[in-house]
Length: 138
Image 1: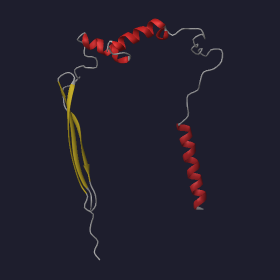
Image 2: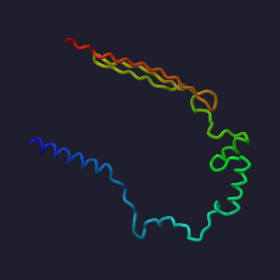
Image 3: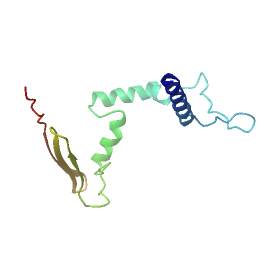
C-alpha cells in the first residue's frame, strides 16, 4: 500500500516538474523568420588580415593594451571613468541576520554597504556565532 502511494506521489511530482520545464514552441513553416545566414566560405575576417595582425603586433611591442582593454584604456586616458556613475540614492543599505537553536546554537550578524564618492563604496560586516551542545549525564 505504501509503495503504491509513493509511486503515485512520485508520478504526480514528475508530471508537474516536466510541465514546468517545458520550452516555448519554435516557429516553423512559411511564415517563420529565416535563420541568420552564415558568412560565405571565402569571406575574410577583418581582424585576420595581414594589416590588422601587423597593427596588433605593433601595439603589443609598444606596450599598449590590446583587445577589450584597449578601448577602456583609451577612455581613461581621455579623462572618462567608464563604469563610474553616482549612485541613485546616497543611503547605506544592509541586512541583519539572527539565528536560534534549542540548547546549542546562537548567531547574530549584520552587514552595511554605503557609497563613498562617485566610484567607491565601503562595506562593514559583523558576525557572531556560538554552538554549545548540551552535555549528557552518565
